Length: 440
Ligand code: SAJ
Image 1 (cartoon, helix red, strand yellow):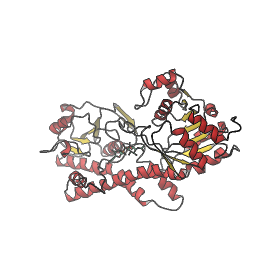
Image 2 (spheres, helix red, strand yellow):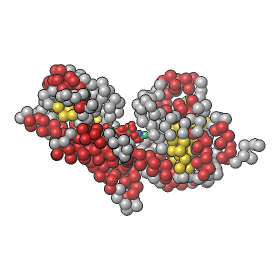
Image 3 (cartoon, helix red, strand yellow):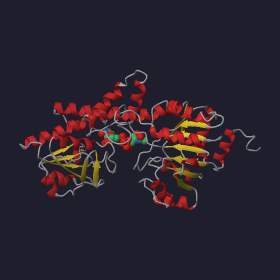
Image 4 (cartoon, protein in one colour):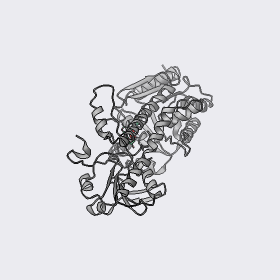
């Protein structure tokens, strides 16, 4: 049977079956590059597309800028011509499949910034041809695929579900996670039409251990938002418990550890200095924004966001109290922050609560220094600092030491031994008579 005789969908399914489909991946960051390598491993040829020429050049030279992707994997794929990168968006007519993983940040007013998605859609639209499957993977509000991408792509005159296919499949990449990766993390897929779902499932199947079909792109978009809103709300709850316990003179960590002995119906979250990263502080606001356009206020989301955003202020208040106990004002006192990354054992400072803590301490006139084994310099939000060595001298020189990120590669015993005062937002300092951080 010739290709023309086969329906468009059958041609695509056949190309999945024999891996002759050329897979395009737009956005070669912490989501796109691992996906590209898994697709190569599954036997596809992959065309990586990124607007950053330096990223493209480095990849084509066999180098990797993503911690979870070894350079040798890139080099081998480039060498055997199963992967090539380009900044030429006009080449998007070549791939049979186009997976889009571009940033979806928030604007300063906490509104969704879908400009990267719109730009990628525009590029795909200009290159769109019969037979292509387009999949959006970036976390976004429910409706983005159908309301923003579909009209743009159908404006070419091609019909979704017949001439081209469109789906949403949320990325679930957790950078640095040793156990869960692109291949073994179940992948949710929602198609605009049944044929769109069928095509997306067939083309991802060789690279992903488990696919989870849902009935629409909106359902798939909401799955990711629910996952991360669930975390934000529960983190907000334990942060409120931290404030409650502080006012009652109860150890919130002891309460959480004991509650966590319940073998059912409880899931442990831990209080902290606030919520950072590129997912949890942002994703819930995508849904809140969408629901505001429908005159509905997502109260849990907004409250959790306020609760979490208020934690830097709460903990800086504890630093001020610790200085007061030494008869010192915040102004002119030296505060050493230990850990500025948004979570432990990584170097990512995006939305890190440490940035808010430093800003609040500066506002109070404190002299702030920091030590972070993973972050050599901090140049963000008008802050320009370099990590200082953690020694008995630097600890003793501070009027207060504040633990903000609980990196494993820090000697907390040294801090405990030499610090004049400590504020431990992560409960990692050794406690008298108990193990590190009072943890059993
Ligand atoms: N945090 C707390 N208390 C907690 C858990 C986290 O204060 O109990 C703080 C962290 O310190 C950090 C922020 O919240 O500042 C976010 O932490 P996170 O563990 O949620 O880590 P992220 O932002 O890297 O979230 C990612 C998400 N992955 C994807 O979106 C694909 C999230 O869905 C994952 O559950 C999470 O990784 C994970 O479990 O590692």
